[in-house]
Image 1 (tube, rainbow, N blue to C red):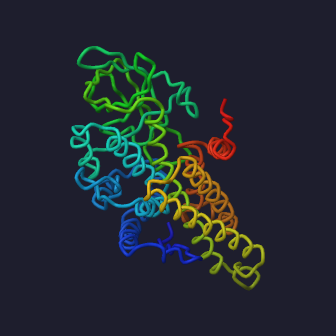
Image 2: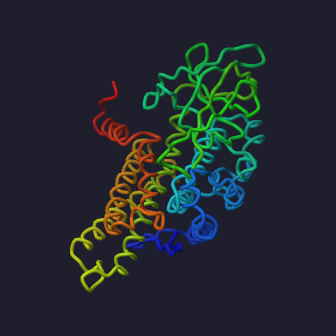
Image 3: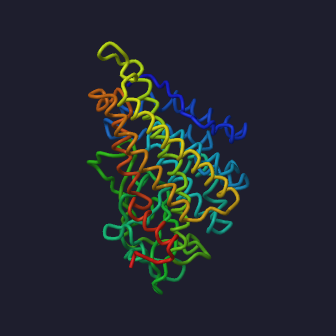
Length: 392
């Protein structure tokens, strides 16, 4: 693979909107990515293997739930900093960012937001360091965009509940120590509970044959009469608000992360176009190449400003789920388009593992689908601006 010479594009000087601490953290994560991840990621993606040895370093950097307060083992950072960290990870590979997003937004976030003090102190510090890894169980074989139809259930058996059902397309499942699972109780109410590896009847078969997120571990969660102590149930939250709040947190990180893919593809294409000589001059000097590059940087710049403003609103606790949906959909959409145009600029070299573009393109086909599909997010925006629910 080509040496990682990435320089992030900043056409509108958005860096001037960031604090010194945010820039320092970004540079620290970027250095880690260039040194530890970029040299190996293509090999792991080609082999469809997950580089588990990176987890300790990512934990030490604070990539897992950096917004969690220090009293629970987190770094207590703001949400713009969280976004920047996810952008740096996904700039290298979506699968690596997915691992961090799941750990932070879908495991640590619900435990911090909905968990008891005992649950917080038991799990969060070890999740923050990567000593424990987690996954999030919501999607089922027959229920994706309509999670309310889930069939995974638990029944009351005195000191514990018995959980039955299955979840699929679960990032981190094959190696996760705990799973935050959403299931229906006997009153048909959705509740969250923490399932630990080793509980009898709980298994996590791995998903094989993926053409996307090949450097990420994906699997199923299978529950066959799993006994879960009642103290592992989130004590206060019931209904879809619980998992949907988690998804908003994850979608926020994806908005920043997917943009990182676009930035990497643009940077690669720009550098290549200045070096590639055809008809006696660099292909960057041809009108159609300049059109592609100009459109790429325009969309990237608009997304940078959109995400930064969303981060400000998130820090002020004013960002709405619909605003987060818009940013997630937009970043995925422009990233896919930038990746495809960048591949065109590189010609045949664009499909090889020597460059990151084709791997980004394949990864983004998952990112545009998970945590809400492109069309679902359009309908969320539509419902928000019209007040009419088009889902039913």
